[in-house]
Amino acid sequence: MTTSFNLFSVGHILFGRGEFRQLGTLAAKGGRTALLVTNSGEAGDGGLVDQASQRLREAGVGVALHRQRGEPTIHDIETALATARKSGCQTVVAMGGGSALDAGKAVAGLMTNGGGPLDYLEVVGRGEKLRSPAAYWIAVPITAGTGAEVTRNAVLGVPERGFKASLRSELLLPRVALIDPELAVGVPAAVTARSGMDALCQLIEAYTSRGAQPITDALAWEGIGRAARALPRAVADGQDCDAREDMALAALLSGIALSNAGLGAVHGFAAPAGANYPIPHGTVCARLLPPVVAANAAVLAEEAADHPLLEKYRALGRQLTGRTDLQKNEAIEAGVRFLEDLVDQLDIPRLSDFGLQPEGFAALIALARRSSSMRYNPVTLPDTVLEEILRQAC
Image (tube, rainbow, N blue to C red; front, side, top):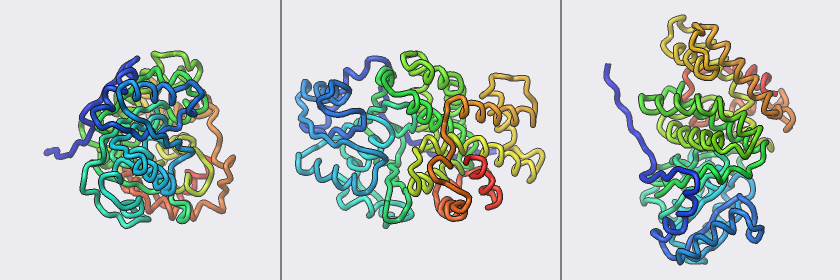
């Protein structure tokens, strides 16, 4: 048996409590003026935006601000890019949740490649390849969710098409990923819950993906165990820095894993669902994850009772529950129950709360099949199964 794979990651990952203090020194290596892209509060409120601006200015770096509101669209990127060019920015600091990181990532890529987001977007754009490395940029994640600090794609909404698509290239990877778990202490419980479920979902989908390989398996395995135990604690007590640290590490591992292994049906649905309904990304992932895990395992078992991927789902059940004694179907069923109970425990809303109804299933399934994530799902799921997954999530 031979093994062959690529592995992409960030050249410099700085992880640890209190490391936010190094932001200014790191940013100064990229230029004299930085575009600060953030969704972590407002300038003047004494919070993280002011703290970041102060650290940058103390290091001799001027600051232009782009406040990202909601998940980024191509119009947001065009606005931020215009600000960067007008202010003469040489570098980008993206700070906050995945929306801010994806926005900063896209702007940094366009600063050195020219053109606009539709020139490079997959599926709904022209899909041109980036040719130059992104401008020097630093990713500072806050919410411990998307792992966007180490992924090579930026997910952008195209409202006119009712779709979200990726601007994707290894040239988009940040120069530095600066992860300080203490920055998440003030994140509200609801955001912690849905962001953390996104990280757990990414870990599980990367672990069971058709693109999985030995390094991503090892990273995902470690992250799954940490997230399963730390997420309820981080939601229950936002001041629990040990739980915050475990979740920050789980999110980081999820980003490396998904960027190299791909995802699956949950994220195949997530892009069109988020583009057509006002559903937070983490909420979509949380509600879809248990039925997708169950459906994948069931279809694999129908194909072959000894299908090699079934052992991964058994191992997943043991890792989630912490029970090494679970055998075969018992382990898979226990893993699905764990995920169902966790989603309910975290008070994740159902998708029907955001307007998704059965009459919209067919259109959503058609859009999901166009997603790049769907091709990495471990098995092809028929439309009838996809409809049942959506029904259970609603």
